[in-house]
Amino acid sequence: MTVKRTLALLIGLAALAALVGQFTLNGTKPELEPWGARLWDLARYFTILTNALVAVAMLQEATGRPPQPDLHLTGVINITMVCLIYQTLLAPPEPFQGLNWWTDFGLHLFVPVATLLWWLAYGPRDQSLRRLPLWLIWPVAYCLYALIRGALTGRYPYFFLDVARFGATQIAINIVGLVLVFAVAGAVIWGMGRLTRRLGR
Image (tube, rainbow, N blue to C red; front, side, top):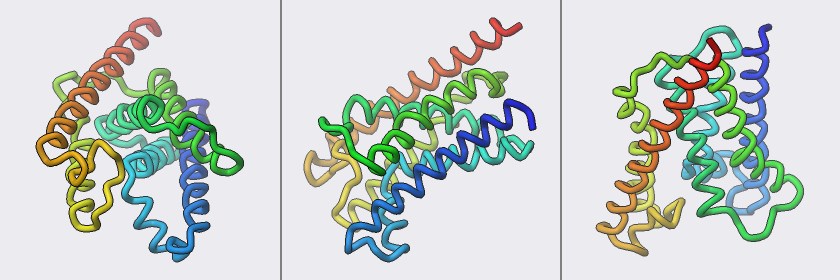
């Protein structure tokens, strides 16, 4: 197995391990002891869904059958934003302990950074920036999903999507701002890929 595929395998396994760790931690809550309840709860979070996307893409890469380039870059951009948003807006003031720390580290730091570095080193970089709207489908679809789910259950996964707290107008503004930030991040990551490709010639 090549270095490229080996590293992809390690990143994919790290994402899976972090997801399993979070699944295990959720099982310590009495109301989430059943497996189905845990999965349903975890499926609320952009972090969980995006780490799952990266795990699938990287494990597919490790088998020698790379995912479609736009899907791969979608994963890279969105997992990078998982790290940035968490570290700037959502990280708790006190560090976690034990399995909580390892899971948090994997989901919010190791997998995002390792995925970005892998893509800069090995990922396909011949996509046109005109395909940027395709890379933004994931966060837009997630916001719609989170809002529908929140309206049905009364629970919103992130404070900036909480319609009950801020109202529909403010949430719409939040989502537009969020998508614009993702667009800028996507353009920057695309540009970084182009630069590393030129330097590697």
